[in-house]
Figure: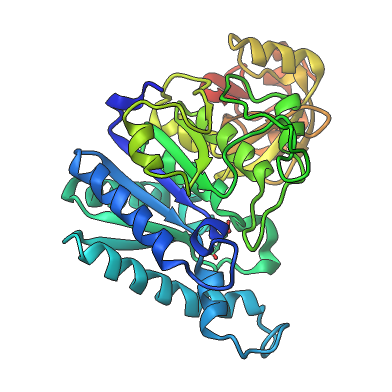
Length: 375
Ligand code: GLU
């Protein structure tokens, strides 16, 4: 692995790893992971930790609580609230042994959904890195209520990809209870072999990851591959590896090949494009025909009215929209030149007709190539 020269590392620690699949935080495992983070820090790396385990830690604290919801509130949020504090106090104890100062950042989708929130979170995390403080990030599960569904990150794999994009990380290391991506689920197929490197996350890779869910954690391999796609298309390399492998972080940092490496599928995009690629900031959808899909995928053209078949949601000129194929798969995101009403009016039309159909013409493109990121 070539990230010996990597400088900024996001490390994601999953619930099943932090609890060893049991009903409480595994202090020995956490101490080992903290020691490795401290050693990387001593090597001059900037590290941000995305840690799950709040809900599990809450369950550990509130063992006698009946299952189900409490006072109409999802139990998970109560557990996360209690557990986040327990989780952080455990990290405080472990890091303070090494004289390392830690910080906490609880993010929600909404907190990074607009340009200002994104920049605030980015600036804070980068400032902490520069000060040598190790920030522990989790989703703010208390605010990110279940009912809002898609407004949650929902799993920390996707959150860690978002954080990696936010801080322009060089690499995202997702530590889990399995050793990486296998040719089949290793728990049910003993002959499954590890895939050491994935260059393109295509349907066959997604199929390999499908449906593997582990222990108390939310994400299985499917969310890890989803996160890998989000991070790699912004130029961040992703490694999924076994957290219990001795000195896994240090060995990866020294160039040893462990787990599965998902190679960055794009060169580093500038920050604005990363933000668009996250899909979190999107205000609506523009559905395009096959011709437009292939033109956009070639990476040379802008989105013109002729290729648009439908408009979803209400958006304004300047908003970010997702561009999707007719099957619903997102192929690009970008800053739109027209309000949704205008796009509805000019969809399917040739650019020569724009002046006659619109009050203001802002150019031939609905989304200009320069303001678009193709996934
Ligand atoms: N935010 C959740 C927690 O700390 C974890 C979500 C996940 O496992 O991905 O418990």
